[in-house]
Image 1 (cartoon, rainbow, N blue to C red):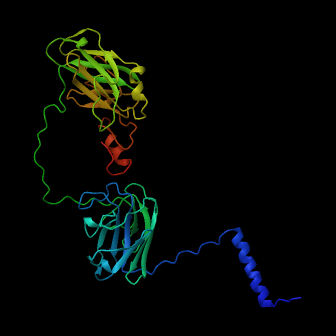
Image 2: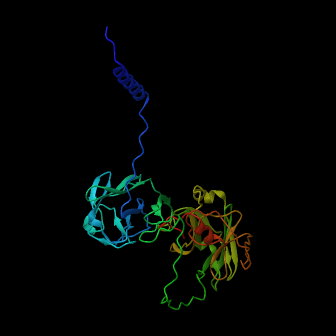
Length: 376
C-alpha cells in the first residue's frame, strides 16, 4: 500500500479542481493590462468614412488620428502602429507638441507618406501603438462604427474613448461629444450681387399644372397660360414613380390621363379627375415619390412637370402666382390659388426633393446627420 504525503495529495487535489473547472468552461480572462501612456497617443479613429474627411486626392478614406501629448516634438517614424494584420511603419513626420496628424488607412502607401499600408475594419478591431523597442504606449479597441462616427478621446490625448456622431479630423475633440461650434466667417468673405428673375420659377406655357390632389387621389388642375384658346384633347398627363438620379419617365411610362376634347379659353382652368388606380404604382413606395408630367400630344414634348414625395394628409400641392409650389391645407379646384394655408409639417426622413412645407428645412436639420446623403 502506498501512502501519499500531504504535499503530494494537495498537488493532486489542486490538479483535480483545475480539471473540473476546465471541464465546466474556461476561466474568466484576465483584463488586458493597459499600457503606460506614452507621449504619442491614438486620438481619433474613423473606420466607416462617408465624407467626414477627404484626403489630398479627394477620397473619403478611413483614418487614424495621432496626438502628441508631450511637451516637445516627436517623430512618427519612431513608432509602429499595429492591427490584426501586423505591425506597420509610420512616416518620418515631425509632430509638434499638442498637434495632431491624420494617417489614411487606405492600403495605398504609394499615394503619399500619410497613407498606411492597411485598412481598418468597419466591424471593429484593436489598434496598438508601439515604440520602436516594441514597448506598447497606447491602444484603442475600436468598436463597429456607424457612418461618419468617430471613436475619439475627449479631451484630446488624455480622455477616455467614446463613440461620437461628430468626427473632428484635424480639429480639437472637445470635452464631450457634440456638434462643434461654427467658426465665424472670414473677414474678407464677400458675395457677388445676384438679381432674382421676375418669376422664379417661371410658369410654363401654353398649359400649366396649377394644383394637384393625389394623396388621396382626387384631381389635377391645369391653366391655359397662353393668349389663345387651347384644345385639351391635344395634351396628355402621366403619373409615374420616380427616384432621384434617374432620367425623367418617358411619355409611355406610368398611368396615362387624358383630357376630354374640350376647349379652354385663355386664363381659364380645368380639372381632371384622378382615382386611386392612377396612383397605385406610386403608392407602393412608402415615400409616395413620383412625378406628374404634362405632354403635348403632337410631338410628345414635356410641357410641364412637378415631382413630389412625402405627401402629407390632408393637403394639395398648389402653385402660387410666382410659379413656386407649396403644400396647402385647403383645395381650390377651378380657382386661382391666391390664398393658401400652408402645411406646417409633414413626414420627413433624411431627404426631400424640395422644400414645400413651412418646417421642412428645420425638420431635415434635426434629423439624420449622415454626410453625403441626398438631403434636398
